[in-house]
Length: 446
Image (cartoon, rainbow, N blue to C red; front, side, top):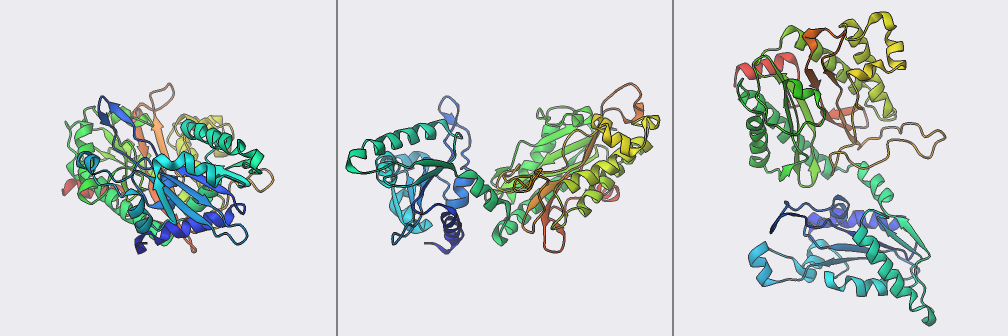
């Protein structure tokens, strides 16, 4: 086994140690998806599968068998066979034998052998772990395998008496990042931060949003990132008030702000950064007031990112600052009550309607529970060193009666990638310009 893949073998061992003795776990990678005619979408492996294997080819399944008595555990890969003709068209395939030695599996077979081998592997296994209900094709295969094993009952062979969901075990493992994962995510955030800076330097009134998106994509790829981690949001003017704006084709006008939510994926790990800045390089006074409010909300939220603190503290800190600012700037009527009333009756939701962050990792909205399900009332879970999350307050002002017109059609979000550490936190995306002074300086000196 290559030393580069020892981490994946160690993860498999950790998972096996959590399984019932003799149990079997099955996990398949993502399928290829046709885009149109004979063209597929760019292939991207399943995150869970990659987390345990490091294997990026399609048509692959991992089977884990937990130790029982004197029988040791084993990890088995099913993958495509070597095929010289198909490799001319589609590229290199490891094949079972090379995959076994390179990636450190105990055994490997052709993917065509999966159904037959599962009948053998599930015989007398007490539990089958798999992603319950997540894949219709896999659910169908499981029914076939169990039926084949039950057909051998006259020979004294039993099928698993219980099926268990594999994914919650993996979710908790993936939630805490190791040193290697953190290093990749730091590099991804650096690339993405530089891409945001490049976009700021390139932006001029009269450009189209997609022209600025192209600057981001160029910076991602030229630095080794394989793809965007998600569809980039490049939203100028009123488009910034659409949370999941995706058209990216409008004109960037003089006097508008532009909100960019974009991050690259590097070696299977996502970054996720949002910056908002003026198209002409200078914030107007109303824009600056709202921007400084969101920045202050983020600073308050970041202070709440500490080991042992509740995840919900982050959002609560941001809402406290934003709600007070909405009152101070006249977005909300002061006669309706103070900040506590605004928070209690949720009137702040008119201008801030989303959460202040999410887990980040192999997926941009990464796996892991947000609540402590083992505690009465299921409170927000405590933060732990090794967790990575985004902190992203915002404000979105659509035209409405009673709202000062100078703030209409302004949308602002500021988002960073944050690692929880033993002593507090580290902002992985700190290299992306964020203050008013930094943004105006970089845009005046491209």
